[in-house]
Image 1 (cartoon, helix red, strand yellow):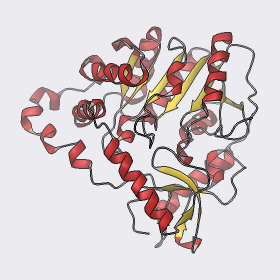
Image 2: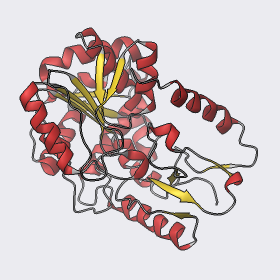
Image 3: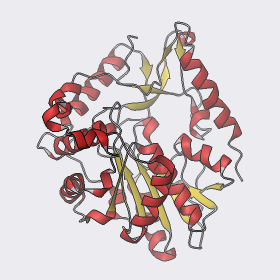
Image 4: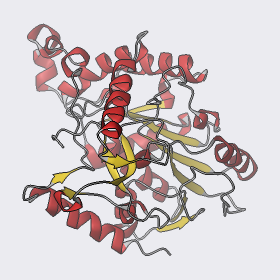
Length: 351
């Protein structure tokens, strides 16, 4: 089994550094700043005429009503040309509880080994250590280049992938998605897709996500619309899943997390309507590209990987590096990018 103790220790150290920055700027920051927050989430959706006494008094379980589900169905029909029903969607409050519920659920179904493409979201490494699960990489480096060998099992298994490779602003190359698609068909394997940063391609005309081609009867694909709008004060995400596992997912999630906040639930419908609109998140994506160009022009970093989506990129910082708190390759389960660090293009700090 891969030993990820060093990666986990780095994250724990980072947690302390971020709370005690001592005049340093955390350039890998997960917080964001942009001018569209009130346009995306107007105050009126939280006003009294939108919230009843019952809303405030009762627990909120968003998966029990289908208004948001129907907007999600429209979204994926439009962008992926895939039809989903309400019982193929599970709503949650952020990606972390959804990912945790899936790991718990899969363990309940008998899986104690999880194959994966590098890297994974930190929570999965954390869960694997604490739940005594085995993580087995099928590749040695991120799948953003051609001709990388995949060591896929020949048996039915459970594979976890992060697409896109969020910290470098790159999608997994389509050739690997096709290989995984064929492998899934051959072995009947489950694939858990962490698609938190999907639908954030800088080419706003390209909305199709290749992981949508996986067998939806064997795939759990998790999407985070709040990341698509860089609105993190609202907790809303969802998983597209096989309908036969809807109750498995619900039971695992409810026991881990319970209900959600009514304010996030009210905002979720607004967010999906924005993403279903004609302009969708194009204004934000254009703003991110503008910020990218500004940082390049100011020679803040060298970016030679070729970012194409999201607001995180993997770069070599220029100038006095002692002024920064950063996340280097050690945080992302890779060894082939020395001196590179994650950089947030929507950084809330002046640099």
